[in-house]
Each structure stands twice: as C-alpha cells, then as structure tokens.
Length: 341
Ligand SMILES: NC(=O)C1=CN([C@@H]2O[C@H](COP(=O)(O)OP(=O)(O)OC[C@H]3O[C@@H](n4cnc5c(N)ncnc54)[C@H](OP(=O)(O)O)[C@@H]3O)[C@@H](O)[C@H]2O)C=CC1
Ligand SMILES: O=C(CO)COP(=O)(O)O
Image (tube, rainbow, N blue to C red; front, side):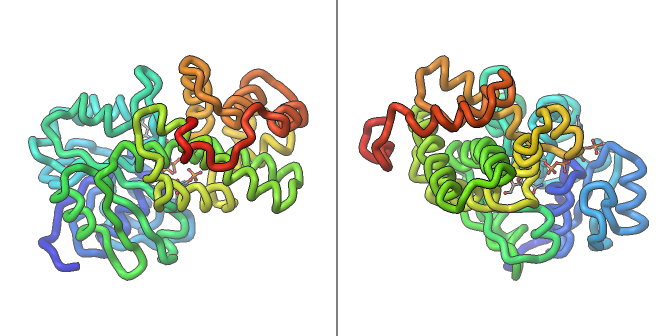
C-alpha cells in the first residue's frame, strides 16, 4: 500500500514490539523502539539483533532503539504499545506529557488491568483521552512474523481513519491487516485465549488425545463467548482472527509462551517455577486469576477458567479437576448461540 512515511514509536522492546518495529521499518517508516535496557538498545542499533527476545533474527537497519522514552516519542504520529499489561499503566504515566493530541495509539497488549478489570484500550481512553485509540490483535506469534510467515491480524477501532492508516502502515506481502469496529471484542479475545493456551499446554504435557484437544479448544471458545456476552460484547467477533484464529494458534503452538507455561505446569512445575523458567511474558497466568474471580462474582459458568484457577492457585490435582469437568452441569453444545448464556 502506498502512503506517506509515518514516524512510529514502539514502546516495549520484547518480542512483539520488535516484530512490529521490523514491519514498520521494512515498510519505509521511521521507527523508534523504546527498550529500557541500554545493552539491548546497543545490540539492536549496532548488531541489528534483539539477543534476549528474538535471538538469531537480523533486524532492518531502520529499527532504531533507545532507552530514552522522550526521544522515542518525539515527533511520533503513531505509538504502538507493546509492554506487558502489568507495566502498561506505569508506561502511560511516564509517557503522558510527551504524546500530543490526536496521536494514534495502538495497544498490542493482550492482558487485563486488575484495578477495575479494564482492557488496555479502556485504560488508554481513560488516561490519554486526547489520543485516538485502537487495538491490534490476532494469531500473531512474534517469531513467525519476523520469519515472514504469512500472517493476518486485526486493527480494531470505531475510528475508521485510524484503521485505514494502520492498515497502510503495517500491510506488506506477508502481513495482512483486517479491520473491525469492535475494539472491545477484538481485545477481549486476545486476552482470554491466553487462559486456554495454558490449559492446552498442560493437557499436552499429560499426553491427552487429539479428541481431547478438539474438545478443549471448542469448549474454550464457548466459555470465552459466554463471558463476552455477559460483559456486553458480541461473541460474533470471536469467530474472527482475534478469537478463533488466535485461540487455534496459541493453543497448538509450542512457540506460545502461555502454552509453554501450561506445559511446564503439566509436567509438575509450580506456577512460579514455570514463569521463572520461561523468562518472558505469559499474560494468561494473571488473566486466569482475574477472569475466574470475575466469573465467580458475577455467576458466569466458566468451568475451564475456574478449574485452572484451582490447579494454579489452590493446588488442586489436575485429575480431580478433569473428573469434575467431565461431569459438569451444562451439556448443550453451542448453548451460547441459543440465548441461554
Ligand atoms: N510475543 C508475541 O508473540 C505476542 C505478544 N503479544 C502481547 O504483547 C505484549 C508484550 O509481550 P512480548 O513482547 O511478547 O513480551 P516479552 O516478554 O517478549 O517482552 C516484554 C518487554 O516489555 C518490557 N517491559 C517489562 N516491564 C516493563 C516496564 N515496567 N517498563 C518498560 N518496559 C517493560 C521488557 O523489558 P526488559 O527486557 O527490560 O524486562 C521487554 O522488552 C503482551 O501483552 C503479549 O501478550 C501480542 C501478540 C503476540
Ligand atoms: O498472542 C500471541 C499469539 O497471537 C502470543 O502468545 P503467547 O503470549 O502465548 O506467546
């Protein structure tokens, strides 16, 4: 797509921020990647590699990294937020005075903010009301993006002009960007699927069959849809890339960090051991806690999320939870489409 080059700031130099910076630089935009570790910044600028998060991948020379947040934001017409959800609010506070009115701000973060159970776009709208907000989500493993594997994503916002500009900025021969007006649904899908990636990773570790994997992924979609409906969202959005698409990839790929955490727990590690061994972001651990608590408070039937909560945080044995799941109270298929959510 042809367009004027943009100046883009990418906040967060982990695997996904680096992947977004790579596409933007390849597409001819000016890119400044904010990393808080000066050694990583130097490695990106001098060796064109992010050795901690994407070792072995050569980055375009146009990806310029800095640990100076203000320098990164200076003159940026678009800002991509790619820090973990636990750091999101802190970064918004640090950057607030350096993001001018009308800047496009896109959240790539797939998590939930505990205080008020807010999605990142809701935090953005609250904290930076002078900006134009969108969400990018879909089946988007960072490692595969930098390897130029064909990938689709969704830019979601009620702001149609924002969607068009982001489509133009990111589209290329291996990255296809769809749009959606349903920012809440797209973002909720990206956050919720991490729960079920942990479940399928755990199931894989204990050697379940393919029938079981089909059962687990499909009932995960049912559970996500039921939750979305109760939160006032449209489960229809979950039929798209940011729902089913991301659920399939994250629940079946050993590149997914949430799947890896689940696998380690299934092998007998504690949550703390699994997270420490991973050494990268696995949003699902926190999301399970928040969603299971919310489901309990609002009486939403979410046996998978609740069962995971019991395994991870109450120390319940996996076989006991599986036995209960197999005898659950609801037994209608696709009941969430029949208005019985
Ligand atoms: N990786 C992927 O395939 C995808 C990830 N996402 C989402 O993107 C978000 C980021 O994930 P990802 O890039 O994978 O995470 P990584 O674990 O790869 O990297 C996290 C990055 O955030 C930085 N960071 C952590 N805390 C802070 C802080 N307080 N202030 C500033 N920077 C901080 C880390 O810096 P440091 O190294 O200094 O700790 C690191 O650069 C997550 O919500 C994830 O769900 C979305 C799509 C795909
Ligand atoms: O969101 C992702 C793929 O779409 C990445 O998943 P993980 O965070 O589990 O690696």
